[in-house]
Amino acid sequence: MRSLLALSVIDLASCADLREPAIDGAVNAVSQSDISTITGAVNHFLAERNHVSLPIFRIHVIDRNTVRVYTGEHYGSRPSAGNESYIEVERIKGRWQATEKVLRW
View (cartoon, rainbow, N blue to C red):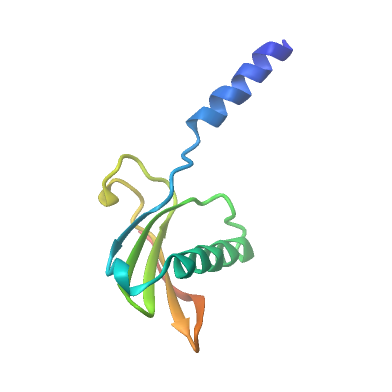
């Protein structure tokens, strides 16, 4: 029984999508440090709203001060293959902050 449980856990872990999110748009407008801070801001935003299990699958850079972070279920490699909900993150007074500008389908 224990070996069956261990195999089930291994199977579930192998199904998890551990890939980095796709980054597109004006990618040269932000640094890798910005991307890390942006994902942290979105994870904090989601945690405050009890949505800690929503994965980030795409970051679309609008300009050096605005990005859209797409979260939720995602299937396939094309950006359009997933949930089109996003959270807008803006650089305000030098700090990245998830705003209340959220698009949900």
